[in-house]
Length: 237
Image (cartoon, rainbow, N blue to C red; front, side, top):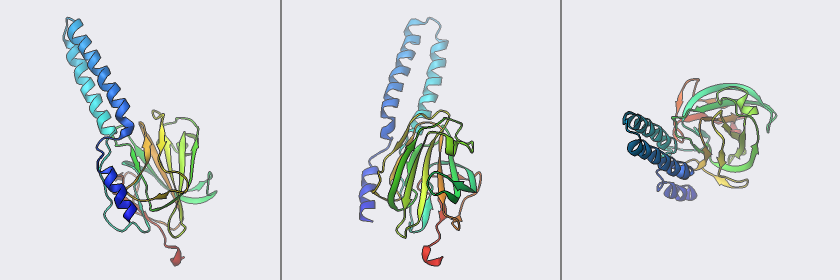
């Protein structure tokens, strides 16, 4: 708990995610330069007002995209799986997980649109057992094949009672960069950031059979707030 509170003090100082600094600065310079060109070198001012309006709208979308909300999960985190991302639940089903477990798991997928915050959070307290990046395609993120064929990063987390889950960051048709912060062997806690995915994408969770799922298809999730599931306590097995 002490380390968790220490981490919280650090992220409370952040308002916009540092992953967006370069994009937002370059975007602002480009928009201002083009607006200045229209304003001073084009006699007809309609293009200036039109481009200015469009630029402001696009920039506001970017600012929202790169937000880094201050969120602290309220409640006991033991056995709880918390949403790793803002978005919409697009998959809740039993599947064969073939990259790590090689057996059946419950898959919960959250799709992040361009209008969602794209910061990702650690879904459970535990220890990072594996972090592995896979090169791949850039299919639309909501398609089923995206989970196994797209560019992705698989993070395996072991909870205190030895339960293993996967949080998989998946690039979408527009995403070209997946950032994952923790390393193998790190202790990880709810409220900490798992990483960031630039532009439309999704995060998959692979949970043990018997897990109590608390969301359904079409539900909206809030990263580090929405409870996705309750893990089955091993002593009860």
